[in-house]
Image (cartoon, rainbow, N blue to C red; front, side, top):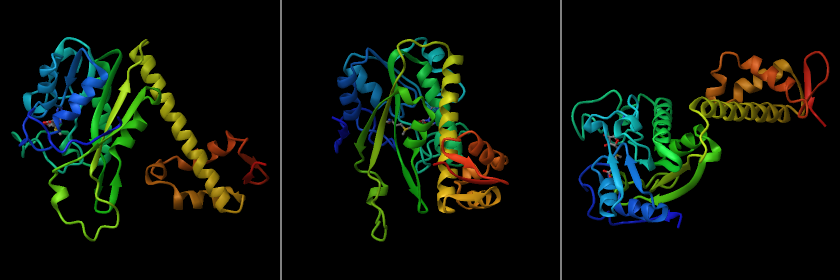
Length: 297
Ligand SMILES: C[S@@+](CC[C@H](N)C(=O)[O-])C[C@H]1O[C@@H](n2cnc3c(N)ncnc32)[C@H](O)[C@@H]1O
C-alpha cells in the first residue's frame, strides 16, 4: 500500500508534542520493511521508538532536544552501530519552531529555524547523508516530510531532497494523509489551490556494496552535474525555440536572462555556461556564422 491514512495516532509517543506523527505509520512501515534495528535521529516525543520497542525491534532515538545535533555529530558514532532502518521526521518549513517554543531556548542547528528554504535544503541533505552513513549496506534510510505553500509560493521539500540524493537509491515514495493539523482548521475559502493535507514518506536503499565515502560522493557530484548540464541544455533549447529556431548569442543571452530560473541566473558565469552548453551539445545546436546559432536538424 503506498497511501497511508490514519486519523487515529494510536497510544505511542505524545499527542501533545507539536508535529508528532501517528504511530500507525511507523507500525505499517516496520511490518512492511521488517527491520531488525531502527534509528530515529529526530525522534521528537518518541513515537517511532515506542512502536519499535513494542514490536521487539532494537531502537535508538536521538533529538536535538536531548543534546544530539544531526548537523554536527555522526549518528553511527553516537549509537555505536549501523541500523537496518534510519528514518527521520524532520522539522520543516518553520510552521512549528521546536527549540524555543516546544522545548528549551532557540538553537542555531534547529531545522525548524533555518534562515530560508535553501538553508533548509542544504541542512536536510547533510542530515540525510548522516542517516545514510548510519545505515547498513542494503538497509533503508529516509524521511517523512511534506511540502509547503507560503505567501503563494510552493516549496517542495521532498522534491528538493530527492534531487540531492543518489537517484539510483530512491526506493519508494509513499503518501501520508495528514489529520488534525492546526493549519487544516484555519479557513482557506479564498485559496485557489487545494490546501496541502499530505506528507511523503521517502525511502532510499543504501547499496549492498558500498565502495567508499569518496567514491559515493564523487558519484553523487557527477549526478548533480549531469542534472545541471541537462537543465542548461533544456533552457537554451527552449530559448532558441522561442526565438524561431535561430538567433545570435546576444539574443540568446537576453532571453536566458529573462527566463532562466533565479538560481541559474544567479551564477555569475552564466554567459560562459550558455556558450559551453551550445558548444558541447552539437547534436542539438548548430553554429551558423558570426555568433549565430540554430537548432540542429
Ligand atoms: C516533527 S518533530 C518529530 C516528531 C516525532 N515524529 C513524534 O512523533 O513526536 C522533529 C524533531 O526534530 C528535532 N530536530 C530539529 N533539528 C534537529 C537537529 N539539528 N538534530 C536533531 N534533531 C533535530 C526537533 O527537536 C523535533 O523534536
